[in-house]
Length: 205
Figure 1 (spheres, rainbow, N blue to C red):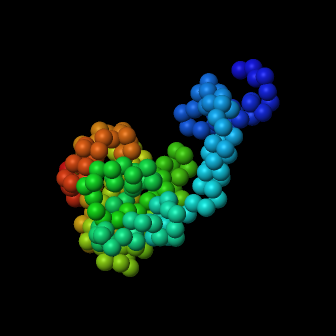
Figure 2 (cartoon, rainbow, N blue to C red; figure 1 turned 90 degrees about the horizontal axis):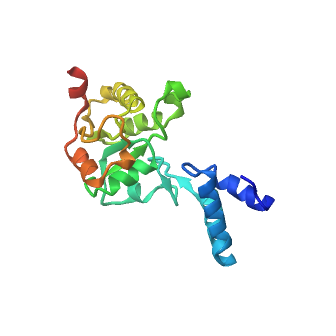
Figure 3 (cartoon, rainbow, N blue to C red; figure 1 turned 45 degrees about the vertical axis):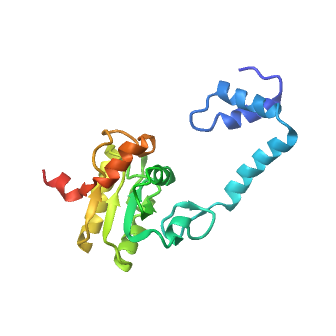
């Protein structure tokens, strides 16, 4: 792609590094910004800079937050004794959109994937074990996408948590194998949360 401006080329190259954004889409976005008022573009840029500089991760659940403790963990309306374990913030948002879950979360920050060099020590698994061992917990829900990496992670978490003798459940398989939680519709995901099943049932068959 030939550019008439080095500044334009640099901006397009930066946009094209975003997931799902090719050079043509990046060029369209950059040209759109060029046609906006300078104040709008400055506000856009400042929002991204402020996000990167000031965003925090909850010290309890590791979810993205504006404060040291996120709104969900600090809410008196949430059931603190039920922990829903998810891969990342997108899955928290997906479950929240179902309006079917009222407990708290634990964000792993990824999934175990030996092929990608990601092991248990690279995820927030030890802090989950610590939460379960030091706070009253009635149930741990493993709401993780039913992929190879997801199932590997679920099995590892089950082995780490089963000694605490608390119910460990997984979402019902209304989500097709290989599917990602963040792309599931709210009704299907909501039903999968409500009709969750003991994880032991899936490994004894």
